[in-house]
Length: 301
Image (cartoon, rainbow, N blue to C red; front, side, top):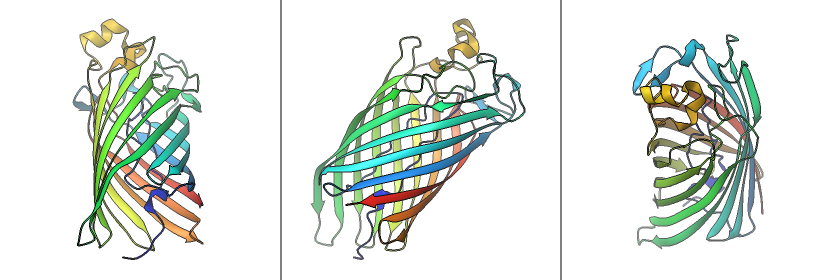
């Protein structure tokens, strides 16, 4: 097997939706850094959409006829190997969201919102690792952590940066890696969310990933799914009674997204560049958006 830079150096950029809550994809992966190994990555993402799912029906425009909405996201991500089987990750995004046609948000009374969103801190542990006679390897692990709203943003409104909830998250995963450097990874997670002002629904998340790596690049394709455990549909009687746009954090937000990511090392096994593309394939009270990203990655032992 070719010795390569650990593909965990690839940053998984969190894409945030400007109208609903945080897209609750976990930022972990099935690879583990060695003890005292540090990876730091920065990324820039651009997201835009002018179609939106009202309930499960795809509308040709955004709520309140706001036209195209775009978001620019700058994220800082870090992962540190506490032990060979235990690591911690931290992620902080800064988001700028605007209505491209200058239409004011009916709740926030502005056409642009920007600021720090949520701080995510997670601990990831390897529970079982078994190598077979043919050099294939199975790893089973889990992660737990918390996401905290630290930016002081307003939760309600179409252009809001997030739902303002403190989320306690747990995740389990299994990864199968082959001698030819192809790997398959499955994840399942639960997000318990608390907001003193809104009843933000808890959610389950699932993902399936297929990837390949060698000494020149790392790449994967992933399907990510969120299923909210409660909430109501935009435009329903419950939504109107709860306050309309003022109650957006309480809506049921479901989605199925496709993610494509690429990482290329460029200098002395310490620096690299990452790029990504994601698109929403199906949703409920969620935007029909596409996102592109690019990032720089640094690894230190």
